[in-house]
Length: 377
Ligand code: HEM
Image (cartoon, rainbow, N blue to C red; front, side, top):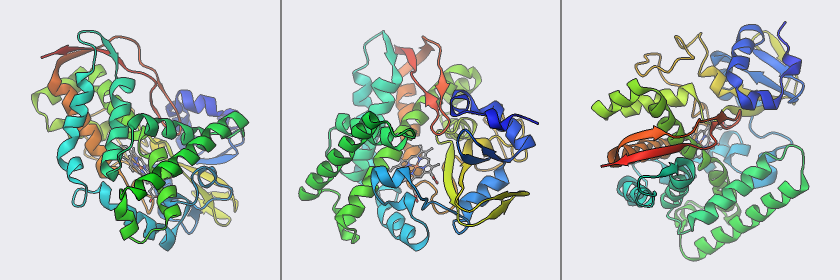
């Protein structure tokens, strides 16, 4: 039998896909002692976990997310969740987004491209994808905040969420971000910004905690999405040629990239009672990681799942999850990736990868850096 007991977080972060493949075949609902957590890797089981909050709750105890951000929509289930999610959604859907999100994002992205060093190597994550994601979230919320501060707070709260070993230095970094974010949101509310959330009847704490969630979960993903799609285009010449010939193909490239390398790897839940999944009993209170990225390569749903194929016919993927916690920023996230990549393709006739690219991460996956040389028009 395959050595489930030996699987470490480090192995999953390096490359989870060969491990997912074995788990799906041999132990699709597996307890990993090193992670003290169950991993669910087949499409049908992942969907089951996400769609049954009465069996697998987001309101976990303990909860790193709640400790770091305060109670928020992702730490609640049922009606309490729905009230927050419904009221927080308007800035993130096309019909109610602010005009700048509908018309102004390309200009923000162009201003970043204008600062690329002419004719020289540029690291796209730092020079483009990261500021793009921060600026977009601030624009969507109508929040006049310096994107560098937003990026620092994002790193701070994410450090806290990933502080599995209770390192006091990391806890301090997270505490500073937690505090500074609350102060900045208070100042914004005092200036009359974020007023939509007051109009929806949310308390100050509800606004602060849920914006902390957006900062921790709504910046790194579109950043990685932009970088992943650019990496795919630069390493799959047929995809780049198809997009250059017909810009409408980009939408398919984005969806297939999200399936193939999902920026968010898991949705983590807690069993509310002893529950049978597949033919395995998961005990009450156990933590269960529904592996979205494993489901997105399950051969029971996808033909030739490890291959990037633009013209797939199998239907939608799970990169934005499914069920009541399906991504709140899905429309905005897709828009950032689409417009962010389009601006690069419009502004440059050619790109060359100048250094090898390493993808890392289990919970969050993307390139650590993406060095390119761009040839201007
Ligand atoms: C483009 C890349 C993005 C990807 C791949 C992504 C992925 C996900 C996934 C998989 C979840 C479910 C997590 C779970 O069930 O545990 C989620 C939830 C969430 N995402 Fe995104 N996301 C993206 C962009 C964004 C953006 C731009 C925002 C902006 C605010 C955002 C805000 C949220 C929020 C607030 C939730 C919690 C929803 C709830 O609990 O009802 N995401 N996202």
